[in-house]
Length: 276
Ligand SMILES: Nc1ncnc2c1ncn2[C@@H]1O[C@H](COP(=O)(O)OP(=O)(O)O)[C@@H](O)[C@H]1O
Ligand SMILES: [Mg+2]
Image 1 (cartoon, protein in one colour):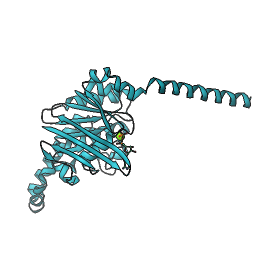
Image 2 (cartoon, protein in one colour):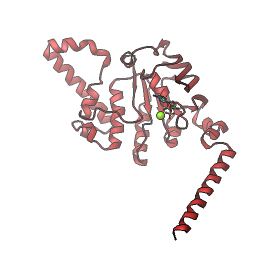
Image 3 (cartoon, rainbow, N blue to C red):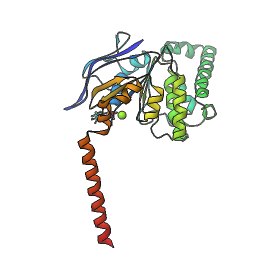
Image 4 (tube, protein in one colour):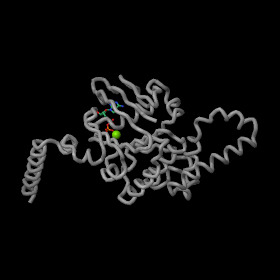
């Protein structure tokens, strides 16, 4: 199974957010997408999940075009995602968050559930058990009947991934899953995500936490100003001077930053002296 971006482009008015990006993501691997803020990482996820339209080029899963499909069609094709800013159903319990997203491919069973109550009850029980298993995997079972909005932040991050998994996705897109997590929670998340690596699944992780990316990912795509700057294994990415420049700037930039910092210190020093 392969997710392919071909000459992908996204433009917002005059702003080109994604510029001619071509790459492929294989099942069985965890793919990292890194790059400075504004590089276009979330835009890639938003286009793949159908939240944003594609300006040019294509996105396909095993040769089937996803761009141009409706959002629910893309979900039914097996694409699930989490958001850079958590978007749970806050008023629903943890398990309800999963239940409403479970089994999108079996939607046509709904009428039987309605007209034949025992069938509906059996299906609801099976659905709850399957969702409970996912909660257990994330250590969230004791929160099953707790409102999602009242969970601690770190648990909400986990719950969002659990909800995406309830869709039994073939492609799992995670937008900064470690954002706002502490060191311990990030390590816990990294271990859980590693367990999700599967020959039947493509996992794509957009992330700033370099420890997580370098530990977890098999391949890494580096984005910079909407372009694909580099792709390779974690060690190839770490060794790339292009990547270092994108993150750290050129030597001149570093000199400029140092000079600006000295100016700022000088200004503060002057003000401190004036006050005394
Ligand atoms: N809905 C939008 N409307 C207009 N511009 C957007 C929108 N979403 C993202 N952009 C722009 O696209 C570029 C890439 O943004 P984004 O994909 O969010 O970057 P990243 O996730 O790498 O930080 C930025 O210049 C951003 O301002
Ligand atoms: Mg982003």
